[in-house]
Length: 312
Image (tube, rainbow, N blue to C red; front, side, top):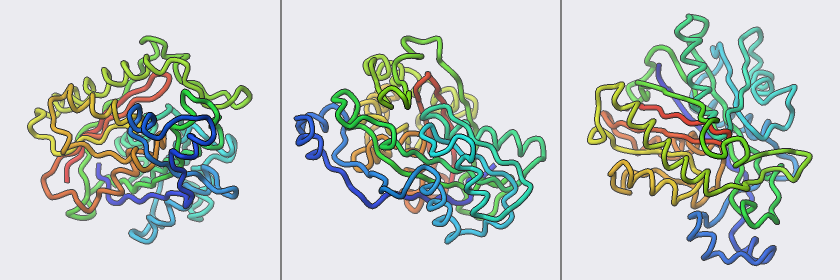
């Protein structure tokens, strides 16, 4: 299984830390120290998870032909519509009838769960060219006056074309994907919640999220490497879920890898949920060199986790 191409979309509006300083007194220096975030993107009044998903697909169409896509998997925990999902809106945009269209949510781990679903369709010979679209409209749900987590969130989307067979020498080979649920750990079912009728996204147990993320992402990364017969010395980059720069650095420290191997966009984009790692792949696609190996590792509310090893 291969990633043939990837693209992303970011809303135009940039929200700096000074907005939250004026709103609720949080100093920019404090936000940066605690999270690493300096600014984030915010969807416009006419944008939502569906429109951003389509924009990411439009960007992908500029790179590759999507006319033969035979599976669409969409992922978000911030939907614009829970009936006409972002995956169905993408199908409508592409005008491709009568193909499987699936939408999922496993919080910030949804990217890897979506890719794993594609892996299953490929294995069952039900598809050969799959479109994975991840999009988050966090600012539609958040309470920006919440001094605990209101300043964390950003909006954005990404689209990936996955193929069963190699299409190009620059394709990323997906060697292994492992996902899991950790709902039995800590305060999994209450640590991060999104209840649209009750203030939206809140994080009452951030410390528990932090400690479990720092535990599960390194652990599953090593499991992926072990399954592939590789070690940490064989890894060129780590792309962790973009939740908190301190978490990302802790993951690198636990793995014993230098920060030069860390791919991070949270400083500019905030927490873009399940879209963050896909955006990171898109932003760094041109720097990857033949033979390099990248681990994408994720952790989300609920709790959910996973890791994927890809090679150029």
